[in-house]
Image: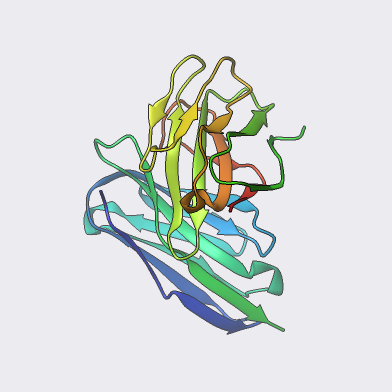
Length: 109
Length: 114
């Protein structure tokens, strides 16, 4: 199956700082999603972004499918942004959604 | 509106026992999914259902079975549990009947098999 790599694996930020999380994938994909798993385990869909750029408040995401990567930007980070961020891709021709191993973000006050 | 509910919240189970994890959604979504989340491995798709009456295998289907008798419910059954099935199980749903459609997750079930 497709390989999905996320970087960095861990990130510690001071509150108010900006960050960029990266997701690389090894093959062509039909679509890509970003999720946030909060410290209590709840998974929230942040973006459904097969290509292009989307913004939602302090978060934005860009997917460049031809170059096989996606970026998640977090601006003016808050302690509530802490948790694990996952990207997941649907490989073209494979009826399956593959998740990366995540980036664990800790925002300290 | 509850969204997606899962039961039980957590369970400790003896190896060899049968167990059914329940999942119910009230969003009238066509598609539903079961994932397991293991430390260091992210989430892996076990089974999915694009619409009521149909099911399909995901990345790690062995040892699990599902059924989709109606739109709202998608139970996951472990016929004879083994310790390697210790994991956190998430149910998800999406409006469209495609694996890659935008997915919404339940709160999860933590299962320990001894």
